[in-house]
Picture: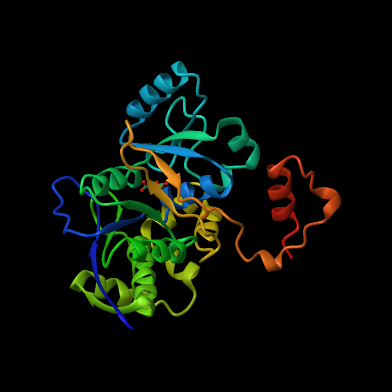
Length: 285
Ligand code: MLT
């Protein structure tokens, strides 16, 4: 029987936003916050604390260290890492080795982390999506409810081309799940996605933020962010926690397209799952 869904979309996060009611919120910040969040869990990270400002991040790191944790301090202001951060906001900076040293991270970005916190204020479940994992996210979202809210992070409270484009991909996917009543904003995003002349990366590179990132040396991040459906990870805000924290929905962080992978037995030490994942990644055919 065809399911009946509702899709609503907010083009940009920002103070004083009116968030319509939804059973679940999908937050999108393709360049690059939700792409980094997805990568964090793809590589085995366990917790990621989104905070608004670099100072909030520094304070939380100090607090977590006092409790014996060793969080990675990561994020950006205007695309580059703030003073004293361990890394910036490039998904390509993350490696298995870094994750094995930290497992837990604290993240502050210009728009994406604030968008997550804004969606959290709705009281509904919240997940982080990007081109890499949006199908996996939607597969999970439709198990939560019928009213799907999409919050595009945007840039400095204004719509962003790439987030709207990704939202359109989510909505097109939702139509495959069943009959969907779309808001005008959702329909606009779908129309943008369906008119992307079939080269997602080339279309994304038209955006002002993509052009800015390329200018400051992060062009490869854009290619990485446009690897559509390359991940099954579903990062979600955990509920009933002392602090806002992202975790991967259990069972979602599994290698994608496993049949394409040749794992040479001698390269995989059974005792260390990270070695297996490392070998898996290196042996992609
Ligand atoms: C954002 O929050 O808008 C992004 O993280 C910006 C970036 O990574 O350059």
